[in-house]
View 1: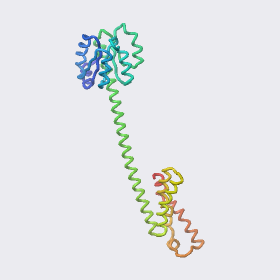
View 2: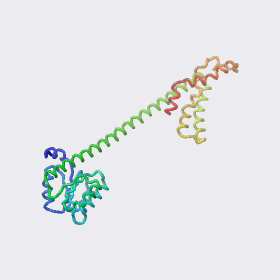
View 3: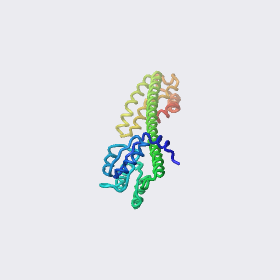
View 4: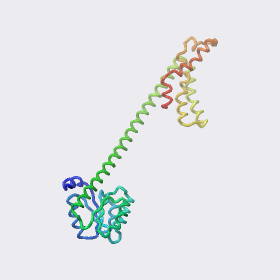
Length: 266
């Protein structure tokens, strides 16, 4: 059993377009609809109905079938083309049954026969309002989801910016630490940090690769931090044994755990 109070509560902020060419029926049905809806627009045929539909936003469309100028079938077809989720109730006479299959194929939601049976009409209203509420809830959820995704994307972008800033700071400090051990090596690293990405660009490498080269090249000698001062700072030529030790700076540099992860995030 349909509860009129529940229908009124659910329909209080919904907007209705009612299209009917019979003045008396339109007037009487509007009186009934006004018991539930606070916003009701009317039209006397499909052409006027479409004009109002295109200039307003309606949660529910209720229409007759046989009307002058444009019937309810053509109007429903135009509306469903414009908005497939528009909820429509069609009021039809028994001799209009030939239109029902066409209306069903158009996606019309509910049908009520003339003369109007109050219980049948109330049942159709109740179901139509529930469907409208469902579509509104679906749209609200979609908007909230899009907003949440946008917010998380912004948060992620800000977090990545912080990581990039931190990576640049680590790069600067590691390069500075190398320079403190060996001024010549420090200047060499800086020069390589300028030349390497420029060469990569000239070779037509991908932007991501150029960025990685720009980040990693100043650190290619970072392993020299682990070389003994007596070898690293030796003023004269290195012995064969010392040179073998010097070459281990590449292995030491590769063992610096932050470097691979920083290169991947660069």
